[in-house]
Each structure stands twice: as structure tokens, then as C-alpha cells.
Amino acid sequence: MAFYIIYTFCVRLWKVFFDREPHEILIRPVFYNFDEKRIRNYFEEREFEIENIKYKPTGYGWIGSKNPIYLVTYIDKSRKLKSVLAKTGFFAGVYISDIED
Picture 1 (cartoon, rainbow, N blue to C red):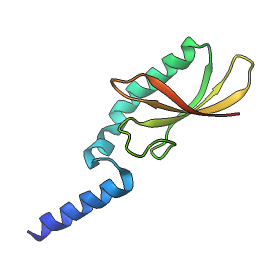
Picture 2 (cartoon, rainbow, N blue to C red; picture 1 turned 120 degrees about the vertical axis):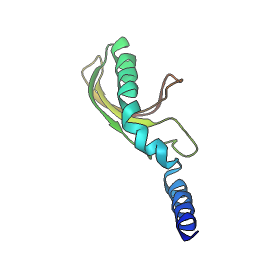
Picture 3 (tube, helix red, strand yellow; picture 1 turned 90 degrees about the vertical axis):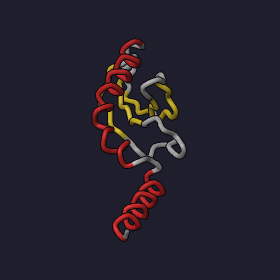
Picture 4 (cartoon, one colour; picture 1 turned 180 degrees about the horizontal axis):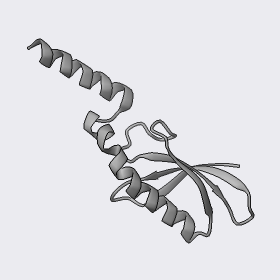
């Protein structure tokens, strides 16, 4: 009984801080590859060169969202380095939410 109470408390505390179920965090690396390919295709279709894609669990718009957010650094057509926050998911497209020069 004590184990169940402690377990329930830890799961609820996890949800408060991370807004995700524990099993969602554990399977995140599996879906990262699919998300990365989806983001790469999105930027390559627009003829941008990807420098870096980094998972950002607390990016802008993360509260209440089940789709992961990635910080994407790329070089645009005018050869300028830019960073954006991209939100994507298994059944969703790629959404750009923030652009920094």
C-alpha cells in the first residue's frame, strides 16, 4: 500500500513538472528519428540547409501541447544563420512558432 501511494505521488509530481506521462518521456527517443526526418524534409523542400536540430521540451508553446518542440538552426537562401522553434508530431505537420535573426 505504501509503495502505491509513493508511486502515485511521484507520477503526479512528474506530470506537474513535465506535463507528460512518464512512458511518453521514455519512448521519446524512438519518435525523435521520425520527427527529425519530417523537419529535415520541411526545410529541404524550401531549400534551406539544416545545421542542428535539438529537442527542447520547454520551448515556447509547450504547456498543454502533446507535440514535441525542437530548436532548429538553419542557413537560409541568403546564407544567414537563423534559429526557429518547430513543433511537429506523428499525425501533424511541421509548425514554425518562433523565428530569431
